[in-house]
Amino acid sequence: MPAGTEPAAPTSTGPRPDVPSPNGSLAGLVVVVDPGHNGANGAHPAEINRPVDAGGFTKACNTTGTEGDGYPESRFNWETSQRLAAALEARGAKVVLTRTSDDGWGPCVDQRGLTAQREGAALIVSIHADGAAASASGFHVIHAAAGPAVTADVATRSTELATTVRDQLAAAGLQPATYLGGGTGMVARTDIATLNRAGVPGVMVECGNMRNAQDLARLRSEAGQQQIADAITAAVAQRYGAR
Image (cartoon, rainbow, N blue to C red):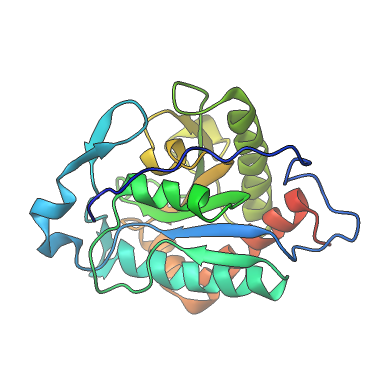
């Protein structure tokens, strides 16, 4: 996707969007849900390898993602994002997806983040699954650390959101990652373009390890995907006011 003119970060003189509203409703809240990768990325190497601005440095436009036993990450991301969008919308939120199918390529990682600015979103949630060693298992929640592309305020609110997402996933019975994050289920990073370019609080949820048989069974099942979607929705509700 060719990069167009990039909008400036929105400014606001109103209250922080993650302060609970008096009536506890998500009505009017705009949430960007980003299903990571795309099903045809592998068929478009020139396009997905093009460098883009990742927040003060360049990265490839996108990658193919991982897979487990023939089940591609892009499909998991798409299916779970659909469930997450439906759950958020049921609480009154407006959801914007960064892609509309799993049979195309892109968009680039910078444009995924910039969607949050263009749509006036309060937050962005990027759905992924990891491809670690088969002995490794569990989920982790990535949040952007403060830096050239991420303000201290956005970093703080992203950490708060990540903590709540982690807590809700754990409460739903999912295990924090055994292989990174020191067992906390959380990892701060400065190199995630989608989060760097969003300009709003955001998390990237690596929902499990697709190369671990037990994790994969959960990730590819409808029940497992719904469990993840409901836990993330509960976290958004807790942070943004729905009860």
